[in-house]
Length: 100
Image 1 (cartoon, rainbow, N blue to C red):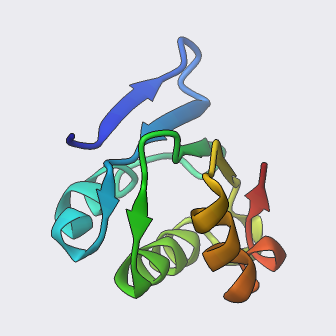
Image 2 (cartoon, rainbow, N blue to C red):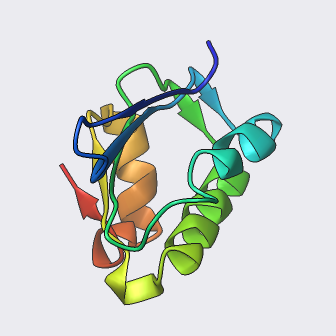
């Protein structure tokens, strides 16, 4: 499954549905989802299809956050399976992202 991107009607929220395997193979496609957006955009990363994610995916999330303004970035991680949520917690990503 490829990454899918849906923008809200007002253009203020972008929902990104991540693939089954979120790893370095998704790097370019993932980066393209947020490289030309306005600062006020809120991002929702939907992990509902993601069964596996590796350390390169953690790095991609950190780069996204940095490119979107670090502490000003508005990124929410949703629908995480238990194994994904555990990985995010081990990396203390709940300190950097809203994890729901």
